[in-house]
Length: 211
Image (cartoon, rainbow, N blue to C red):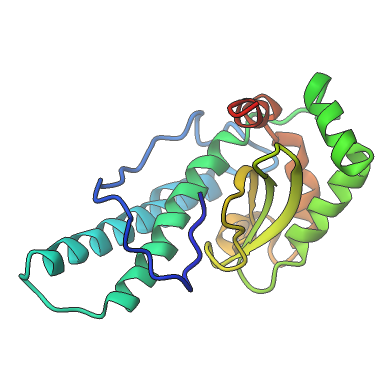
């Protein structure tokens, strides 16, 4: 669940995060996403969010034990940013698989998208627009609500504009480190080609959990 950084989060778990390995080889998503990008993205950027979240958790624990004093609001902001960054990346890796042409959802997943958006083409256009239109750095997200209805939205800087009570089922990272080596400043080209690597089975599994 995404946590908005504007809220002081005092209930966050003390359990440390770990950098999960990719569910495929670094070059598995080529030519859509290169091996070089995946190595940098996973081994450097994802690791940095894991480290940042754990550092914030350490500070919170030391404050609770009276070992140090600190700015709780600032620490909670760091925790929200890094914790969400780590968790969004875990989902992002699993939301993808080796590329295929005409990679459209099928069966009940397709029916679900048609019900909520009218057609897959309408959904794809809306989600792509959300991804291309994120101001600065962020994500496009497909959420499900408590009634398993779907809604497209954006998350800026990992935590702003998140919808509390909604669960992400499909996420697309549009921070520049996710695509710049391959596409330079052509974010729209990256988004368009990304549809070839969407793992609809993983999306379906996330949707089915509460059905």
